[in-house]
Length: 336
Ligand code: NAD
Ligand code: TDX
Image (cartoon, rainbow, N blue to C red; front, side, top):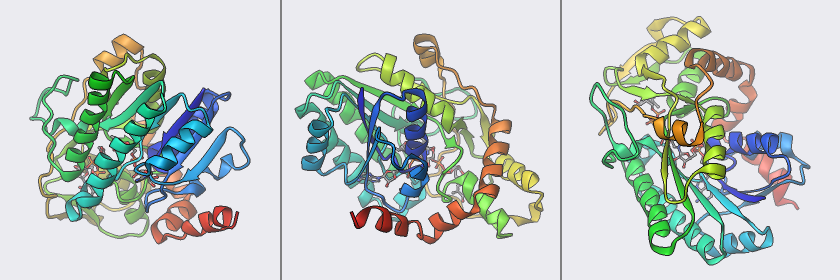
């Protein structure tokens, strides 16, 4: 099987590429990534020289390039993760979110249709459902009510992918997962940002009252869910993937400070995120019943492991935050 993974140098994508190399060693993985600020090829340095992993720097919106790759590598399936992924950045500048997430996804779908890709897995998000009250959980038929430019752009791409199934009979499966955490997450997202700030003894900015709730999913559990959806999901179906670990932001921030033995005086309540969704919670009953998937990690064990990883891999996040990792690409690839 030959698989095109888009965004394979980002947080989830790089974990997924490593996971697929371990779990499906005979598959060829072609990794198409533009290497934006969020993409770091150095994360995949351990795959250097691996003939089953082919990295290509490029844009999902470049239809000619995508079609060329689909043909050149006889791609059977696409796992589409490439995106602009940060809500706060979408509030500062929505345009690139529409360009990449909406238009880029449509180009990728069109190229996949033209070249007869057998399965297209669209990695979407629980943010398409908007915000929940204090009770209940999102199911696959919950109304779509995205709040931010990011989530609206993801909802658009999610629906365009489903439209390609309904209209053109393309084999499309959509997954919608909750907040991921784990190794190699860019330190702009809640957990790695708080760890990095605490390690620098800098203030930890908690938005609003800190009582917003997210449903945390270990990235390894997510990767397993993506593989199962790719292999066993039914065409045209949506599968929610959730970790069953609802936590208030402030609990997480305090937990991180506890793990690092840092004082709670570092917590700084700051202005709320505009349009901040109050609560997300995923009902994963469908993927459990139909595909037999279930999260394995507990949040407490996963968070402790993640915090330890950031403590021990300071060089990785220092290079990522300074932009120094770009030199790696320049020396490894540009000269070839
Ligand atoms: P990320 O920001 O860490 O990585 C995104 C990757 O996509 C980067 O490597 C970047 O270089 C690449 N990219 C961006 N624009 C591109 C383009 N035009 N062409 C090719 N590559 C491009 O994101 P992530 O957190 O790993 O998220 C991956 C996917 O999962 C996204 O689609 C996101 O919406 C979705 N998702 C993420 C979470 C989460 O908690 N992180 C939760 C639900 C859904
Ligand atoms: O500095 C911060 N302070 C803070 O209080 C940051 C960065 C975040 N927060 C809050 C906002 C959210 O309630 O923490 C929560 C999590 O924030 P993010 O890490 O930015 O994630 P979120 O907005 O929930 O979106 C994430 O999950 C769904 C991913 O970034 C998306 O790509 C995914 O689709």
